[in-house]
Amino acid sequence: MTEPGQSPENPWPVRAVATRVAKWIDRLGAVWVEGQLTELKVRPDSKTVFMVLRDPAADMSLTLTCPRDLVRNAPVRLTEGTQVIICGKPNFYTGRGSFSLRVNEIRAVGIGELLARIDRLRRLLDAEGLFDPRLKRPIPFLPNTIGLITGRASAAEHDVTTVATGRWPAVRFAIRNTIVQGPNAVPQIVEALATLDGDPAVDVIVLARGGGSVEDLLPFSDETLCRAISACRTPVVSAIGHEPDNPLCDLVADLRAATPTDAAKRIVPDAAAEQALVTDQRRRSARALRNWVHREQHHLDQLRSRPVLALPLASLAAREDEIQRARATTQRDITRLISAERETIGHLSARLTTLGPAATLARGYAVVQTVPTSGSPAVLRSVADAPRGTQLRVRVSDGVVVAVSEGPEKSTAEGSE
Image: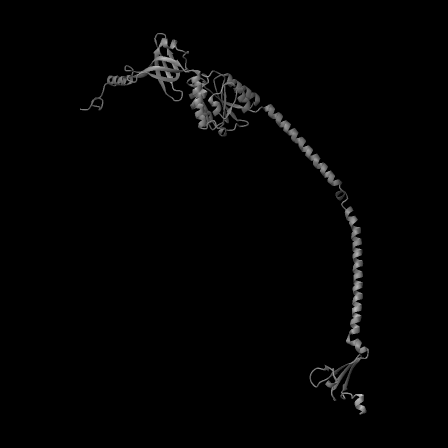
């Protein structure tokens, strides 16, 4: 036999389960819980007030019940969006099978505590790099379509659209109206942000709201919204409140504007100012071009006025006389050199003629050669080489004489003996 409730053959009745659950929950005792009121139902004929307490950082909530007098005597006026700390005892109502907290004390979250929590979140996001200026995306010079997230028929919407249209009449808007304060503001703003970020026609997203108290601006310091802004691929401009207001979304956004009007001025160029700038640039460019042309023309005039360009053949004419004189001098020098060399050659030729064999023969000298029976004639150099009967060949200036040697001539001394 199985234990009750452990098999389909032996189930527990509903009352048994509900009673056991109620006993377990009753053991929890009183707890302190912090959250944001999202619903507040006060029935005229009931002494019990029903409320819903939501966790701003997560999509979770609890049902609360409390006496009407406790709500009436609360330290702050309880409305939807009020941040409170409550002390209550968990209860499980067996008749309806519902869970709730029976509240016996309500305390308001002070401004100092809210600012301290925002500061702790700021340090956390800063440590994660969500405020890093290097991650900021540039705002386009002239956005095609501006995504605008703001309250319905709000002054912020009017300021952004009016100022932007006045500066650039062709600008277009994709407007998403959401609530901008209270417990439901963050989910609606995050949803609108995701919708505009997914639209390829939207070039920049503006998150705009007028000024308000610290409690009114709490949604714009919500961690979920800050991380959604950081995750956007489209540049986001934060235009929350006025100059003293500084929610955390201002630090995460790619551009912070002091007011919605300032946001419109910073993301949309002024058509009149841009036209004036273009006109001024054209005027300055034309003046600069004219000045450049004048400078270059003056430079060309100076170059053309120089003698080398004004009379290009004058220098050639001046050089022509120099060339003629140089040619005449060169010809004279060459002629003188040739005459000197010719005279030198004549002297050398005369000396060569004087010293030559023909001149010697002309002066009465003769060249005597012996003519051997075989072989070539040889010059007679000694009387011993011409014994008696030797054939001789005598060359004189006008011819050759053949003779026969009679032998050496005897000296006078030998003849007298």
